[in-house]
Length: 185
Image 1 (cartoon, one colour):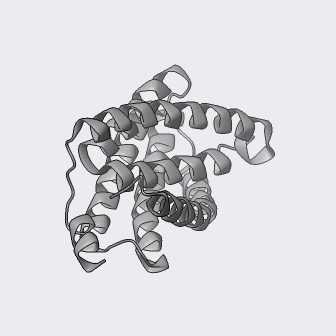
Image 2 (spheres, rainbow, N blue to C red):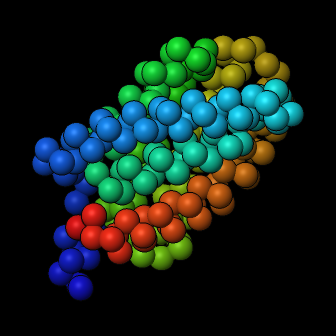
Image 3 (cartoon, rainbow, N blue to C red):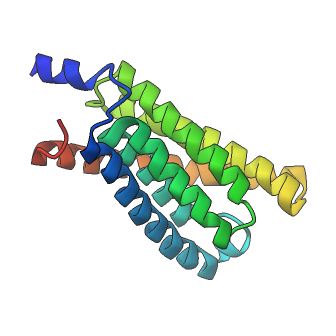
């Protein structure tokens, strides 16, 4: 068991064909999930105000999960595939490129330091994804949409407050299930 954890912990890169192809395929699944949840958010009052709470949770979940499973460069491939496809549906796509990239790199750093078996590991991993990612998107809202600073701050804080705990729970539970199934070594 310790030997298995030592193999998982400390390694940021996984460049086998399975991980690279998995990153691309999961990037496509990531895009589809974000498209669907973005449409759902658009129908809700919070979405009409610019707070994509369901979409943000799914985004943070996939950013972390794909990185935990496929490491790098699979995580960055999936994250940036999603960000580049967002050109077709959001003027914030430029900020998504940076938010997705920073999120997946953050998760890699945390996963290299910790074995991702405790809640605190997942809370810390999602802290970087949700806080850093949503700050970047908030800055994008300021410059691209020209919204007032106080509105951007409030929307960003609400989005972080909702997405961080939900994405943490989803990521931990799904990652544990994937590890238990033997798909991740």
